Image (cartoon, rainbow, N blue to C red; front, side, top):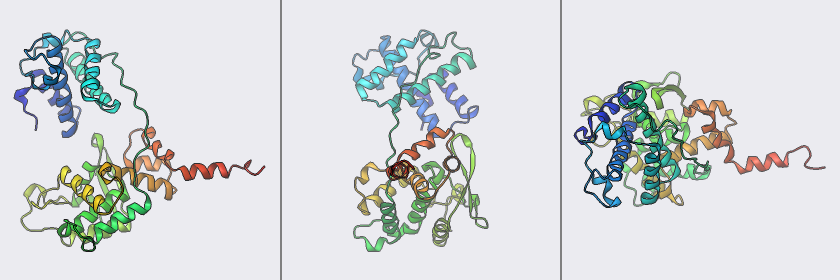
Length: 335
């Protein structure tokens, strides 16, 4: 939760603008608040507007009285200094610094260009840190089958703590591995979003963009088996249409799903299970579809809800077997 009393008025105005006009998600608003508040605390420290003398305690600085006059003094060099501080004190990775950079850029764009509260935008020429493309971590086909088998038959696995919710957990992981949904997309599924006659699911993804996911037999069967045991009485009013419910009979939360996936991976004996996450199951779905489904890269982009084809193209580089076969099948190979 965001405590608006901890923020200066102009930061709360920016968050309201981002939520309503830019239609950013709740999670994005939280990230904006965290990033900009941390940045302003650093500026207060750098400009000696606080009694805090040690960088280690910057996060404890109060900024509710931070003035716009001080914001007007901020330079591009101050922003670079903040990013350097993050790298030095928190060992922030390029992806994290890129997110912070994006938050700062949209914040100053709001203050300067949208509301004219400051005359100069210090982030106008701010460059985003370069992020090296890394191959995504994913489960093999054999590991994916083992995971599904583990979730489907918990009684066969000693120490399994999810017996009572096995149908729900199996349905969630089946959808993640077959459809490649994001975590929030999975949580947000409503029963009314599913067209059982045509085996289709309407998903609201990033940027409030809607797309259609075609459900295969495995997904439909898993969903139907879960619906047969899904609680009907005592469900919280605002969760009555939610597909996946928690034990408190309300829409399941992010942390619960993350915990379930971690536990099921561990029980399945997946090597380095702790390094995998819900998002890794999305990578797995995309990789398996590309490797075994003979799927067109554009179709995969549509299915995953990627805005840019370059994001999807990373899955074309993960299959060494295909690369090896391409070289071996070169018509010049046997000359």
